[in-house]
Image 1: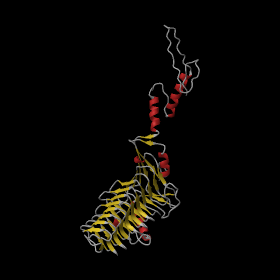
Image 2: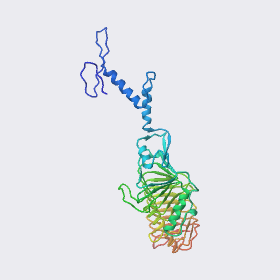
Image 3: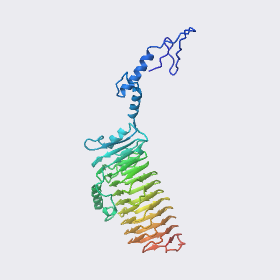
Image 4: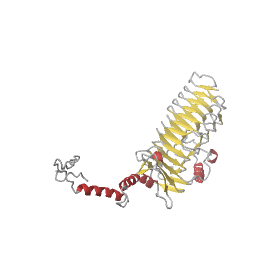
Length: 426
């Protein structure tokens, strides 16, 4: 509608509002005459709002415009905690694409939240689920309740290096624990985290062990590609062609004592470049097994594990259970284990690692190789049955191995090596 000027006066330009004049019989001032549009259009506008909000106009209720405004706001804002179901008979949405498309219509306020409950079963996806809503910090994608205890090292088959039999046994076992599986085919990345804050809970995310065509914004073949903050709660990732968890200068935080398992991927289990992975609960395991090259790769990143178990990375393509470069920092609480890998740990490029009271054994070459001014603490750890060396320090490395047990190492304990500048405290 437009502003209805006093009757008989010229139509003003938009944004100009000629004022009405009150009549005054004493002075003989003639008052402005309201035109019919001043009454008709106002009422029609108000009644239209009331009707479009689903209300029936009523002379006896003079709050209907306020009710209509509140109702229309609520249609675009989520102000309370709500739960929607995904997949399965009678669900709200046929898949996560439909769920996120619905969510895109809304703004979630600080009093609101959304949980997408994904039904038990195995659900197949052929394209990436992009997480790209501005209020993802108030959204959870949750699978069915776990069918068994959260995975620990003893439950995960590791008999060799990226062995197909181990991969098969691992996914069979994981399916016995996780009620909900999201299966991604064609070498696509499963989840691309483009906006911060979503929580993924109780999900088994599986891939096709291949790398498809990248859409350009992110690589193909990752289990989760994180460009923005992500929270995990009892997640397992298996069988992606590239990395299981690919963290790019952002934070991935585990929010409970349930384990995170990443198995049988084509390159790294966890690839963290300049970001943060935090699974610091003392009782939580991060299980990284049977990936083709490296279990945990840190390039200038911080990774803090409650208990870390890395096994099954080795020839012909395998590197080490842990590789940390470019000033990366890795911390693992007591009880962590590295075993049955090409090598246990490679630290270089001023990287640091705190790996006390750990077990590092049964590697094809060496337990730990520290060089390039890297720093390592392995106090009270046990290094054994590593084929060549339990520990090698060189090129300005410093190792505190107080209380550690090992058989073959270089240089000698408590002796500064003038050739390469390395020192091992014991």
